[in-house]
Every structure is written in C-alpha cells, then in structure tokens.
Length: 345
Ligand code: SF4
Ligand code: SF4
Image (cartoon, rainbow, N blue to C red):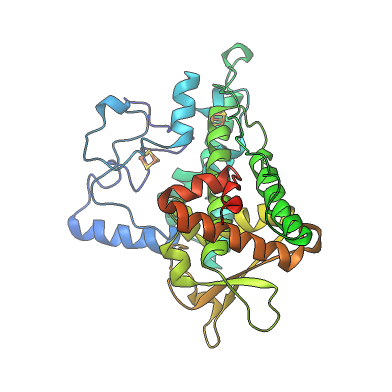
C-alpha cells in the first residue's frame, strides 16, 4: 500500500482530486460528485486525477498537473528528507499552516454560512484537514525522529544607493528619497514572516516581496490621481488584472486583502478596493475568490509619515520614467530601488 498521507498532511486516499474516490463511480455519479465538491469547497476536481503527493517527481507523467511540482511544502519536505511535515522541528511553519490549516469543518461551514452533513464532511473536508492529521503523526514520533528543516541562506537584498545631486528641488528630492526608503524597507523586511531561513519560508518571503512590489509598481505606473482630493492613486479593475506581470496571485482577493494590504499598511501605505456605484460587493469576485475584471477600482494613498501625496507623485514619476526607458526590464530596477533614471534629462 503506498503512503497516502501527502507531505502537508492531506489524505490522498480520500482526496476528490486523487485517483481513489472516483474509482468505482459512474460518469454521472462523478459529475455529481464534482459539482458537490465545487459547492462545498469552491473548486471542482479535475478530470485527470492527481497521481498523489508521495509519487516522486521523476514518476509523475509529463501531462499531469497534480501534484504540483512547484509546491513549496512538497519541495521543502523533500529537501529535508522526511515523509511529511510532522517530522520537522519547525512544524507547523507558517507556509504549512496557510495550506494545511485552511480547510476544516469550522472554516468551510463559516464560508457556507450553514452546517454540512457528516457525509459531505468525510467526502470533501476531512481529507484536507492536514494539520490535524500531522499532529496525530507527530504525537507518535520519538524525539530522535524529528529533524531540522532544510535551510537556505536568506537572499541578499540588492538596494541601489540613492543618487546624489538629483536635478530637482529640495522638496521633490525629499519625496524621491521617501520612495527609496519605502522600497529599501520593504526589501529588507521579513514582512511579518517567521523562520525565513527555511526553504519554504524563504521562498514564501521572496514571493510575497515580488507581489507587494508589483502592486506598488502597478499602482504607480497605471494609477491616476483621484480627482476630488488628489491624494490617492486609482486604478481600474481591467488595468489591474491585465498588468500583474508574473505576480499572478494578485488576482486572488483574499491574498490581496490579507497579505498585500496588510503588509503595505505596516509601511504607511493605505489601500482599499472600492465597488463602483450600483455594484454589489458580493459580485466583485468569482465563486473561487478571483477578482473580476470589472465593477471595482483600487485606491492607494500614503500616510503623512511616508510623505503623503508628494511621495505618491514621486512614485508615479519614478515608475513611469523607468517603464518608458526600460520596458520589460524596468520592474527589476524598481525592485532594486535603482533611481539613476532620475539623473537623466
Ligand atoms: S491534490 Fe494533493 S491531497 Fe489530493 S491527491 Fe493530489 S497531492 Fe494528494
Ligand atoms: S519548514 Fe518545511 S518541512 Fe518544516 S513544516 Fe514548514 S514546509 Fe514542512
């Protein structure tokens, strides 16, 4: 019997995406089952089943989408050399909690606003209660079976020096310096993540930094100053969705609200999603939590401690100059806070 506990503690033997539950079903029953999964979890199991988590990468058929070869937890567990996260001294790290702790009876019933039947719980929710399953495994382990997780050195932060002798007034230069400070502080921060020397957490940090930077870039490049007060940049839904670059998770509203907005607020950047007139706030996302391409705008303003609207204007000038000059290569310069462009006429 293969090991059917995934590296993050899910039950691959009962998972609706896996090969087992569907084995005895007729095509009609399987369609019903997929729809039930969508109603309860918000996602529909794919037709080609996952080959299960403990299948080594070399044995996953090329055409298989699951298990996800890039899954940070899966890679971290492999690098640590253990069967699953229960064996790890950092168990449960934040990366694991965000995945294996997301779906449980309480969170699903709260999302649905109603209790679910025992049958629905066992079929669709229990397989994903990863933390609970791992805690049971952990309780059965001897101390010498617990190992340190794979570590990687924290990535080097490349922040360019702020250029001297900028051809701007004292006030304008101070605003550009405030943008530089903001980017440098973001690049040096662990963004509230703990244990960022582990493989999983280090990659998570890199990923979050890239997304937060892209968000600032996007608002700076495409945002227009709000007419009435002139203190915030506003970008419409379609422009936002179309200009996310490689940072695709910026389309998932829960990520934007819980991570991007939260991180930026720590640095004095206030962000808000505003529904357009006549649009119900429930209609701003799809059933699976993706932002729709219409019906809302994003607003971003800077608190006084980061220089308010003057710094926002400096951000816009800097980003637009970079974009005009360097196109696709501009975003990396922005992430490095490279402001040499401001010396050019
Ligand atoms: S999707 Fe995840 S839990 Fe489901 S079978 Fe694949 S690896 Fe296992
Ligand atoms: S550090 Fe890696 S092995 Fe340890 S709990 Fe997190 S994801 Fe699992």
